[in-house]
Image (tube, rainbow, N blue to C red; front, side, top):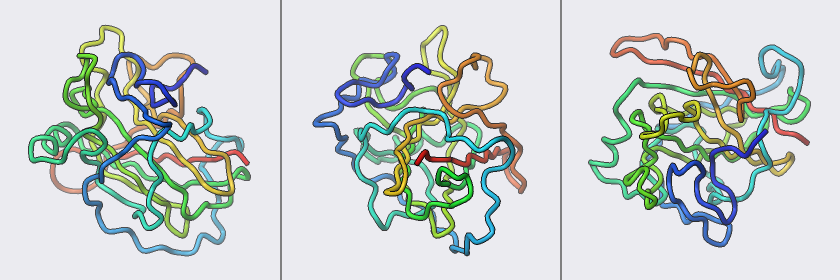
Length: 236
């Protein structure tokens, strides 16, 4: 597969999306928006592993160390918000709130597709509903990101975050499919840099640069919302 449209060591974000320079192989990220409380951890004994299919690592590339180390006590659940080059203000928070609400959840497994990996670090970042990573999208001097977070999986290897459905890159006539970037690491497995993509996207090609999952309606009152399950298998 080609390189994901994410952050690569010593490079800027691909496809002209955001000119986000990586200095010294690491991003100096400011804290993300305050997360929701973490769910109560339960035993992972008897876990059946990811649903359906043959056991195989999640498609993607080797993690490249382009994001800051996630704090050891980071929560397993969060609401994505401003960070990185984007200061948290009322305006930048609002820029990430419009659009269809989306909850993404899953479990990180080892190479056997059965062993949940507690304490795995997950960095996620994405465009907002308007297809913008941050201010200045498409100008060559854009900032990232309106929507991102750093998490650690709980005792059962689980994570969850609340966000909005990402938009296609603003201003591109032939954009890549809408996606959420993931960088996942654990001491007992190989790191992974991948993208979460969604079934039914009109720009989804035959060789997607990551994992494709369905979006389903989320139950509950209030405006329409979606949910997606994304179980991640790290190679050994």
